[in-house]
Image (cartoon, rainbow, N blue to C red):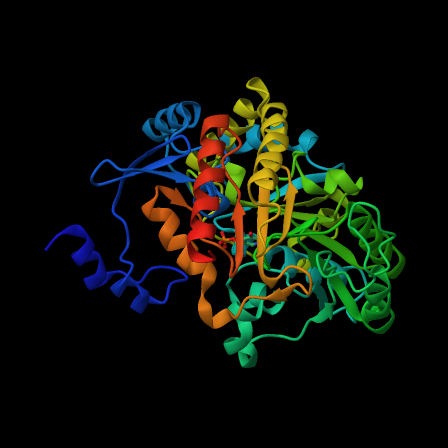
Length: 445
Ligand SMILES: *Cc1c(COP(=O)(O)O)cnc(C)c1O
C-alpha cells in the first residue's frame, strides 16, 4: 500500500467528511518552504491560507528553524509550575510592550481553544473574587468562532460547528453581529455610523448586569466567512463593557501578529481588551502554543494567601521552551525585516489585482479585504445578493479544481479567501489571482 492508502486506513482528518476522500484523497505533503507545500511527486502547491492561518512567515522560515533547533538541543520542555526559563521570560518581556496597553500578565497553554477556555474561566473567577458573583454569564456575537472545545463552542455561534452539541453547551447571550455586505441599513463599513451597535446595546440592557465577559473576534469574524466590521463597532463594544462592568475578551488568535495590517486588530479601534487570546501566528505555526494575556488588575484579584483559595487552578501543557523560542524568532523577524510594512504594500497590490480580475464577475458579490486577508463572497445574484444554493458545494468544487492547478484555497462555504503568509511575494500573489479566477470561471462559467 502507498502512503495515501495507508492514511485512509488509519487517519481521521480534522474538519473533513471522510467520505469525500473517495473522490478527493489527501495529498501527501513531503516538504514545505516559504509559501509552498511540495507533494511526494515534488509538485508545488501555493499555500495562500497559511495552513489554517498559522504560518505567519511561510513554512520553515530559516530564523524560526534555527531558533527551535538550537533550543531543542538544550531543553525541550519542563514543568512550568515552580520552574521558569529564559525563552518564556524573554517572550513576555518582548511581547508586553507590543500588545495593547495594560496587558502584562501571561498564561501559557497549547491551542487557541485552550486559550479561550482559560479566558472564560479567568473572567468568571475574577468577577466572583471581586464581589460580583451574580456575573455568571457570557456574551458573544453571532457568527463568532472561538474554537472547538465545549466552552469555546458555547460562546461560538457558527452553527456548522456547534448545532449538534447544543445539549452539551452552556447558554450565552448572543448579539446580532454586523453584516456589512448585507447591511440592513444599506450603509458601507468604511463610512457608516454603526447603527447596528443598537442591537448590542439592547442585549447589554438585558444581560449586562449578570455578564462576566463579552468575547469577540476584533474586526474580522474569520470562520463566519472572513466578515469584516469597522473599528468603530469594536470601540462601541468596549464602551458598553465599561458602562456595564463587563470584561472584554479579544480573541486575536486569527487576527494577531499583523494579519489585519496592524500588529493586533484592537489597535485599529484604539482599545485595550481586559484579556487577549493569542495562538496561530504566535509561533509562526511551527509549534502549538497559545497565550491568554491579561491586566494586572485581574491578576491581583487572584493574588492572596494560599488559604484564601483564590489561585487560578488551571493548567495545561504550558510554557514549552520550544514554542517560546519559535515565538521570539517570529517577533524578531517581524521587526528586523519590516514585515508589516512590506506586507502592507503587497496587500494593496493584491486587492487591486483581485478586483481587476474578478470585480465584475456576475457571481462575485463582494471582494473585501483587511491587511493581506482578502475574501471573495460568491453569490447566485450580485444584485439581490442571494447566496448560491448550498447543495451545489460551489466552494468545494472550486477548491478541488484550484488544488489541481497548484493553489490551496479551502474556502469557507462559498467564500473564497486568501490569508497568505505575510512574506508572500508579488509573483506568488499574481499566481493566486490568476489561478483562483480560472477556478471560479471554470466552476461558475
Ligand atoms: C483557530 C481559532 C481558534 C481556535 O484555535 P485552535 O488552536 O484551533 O484551538 C479560536 N479563535 C479563533 C478566532 C480562531 O481563528
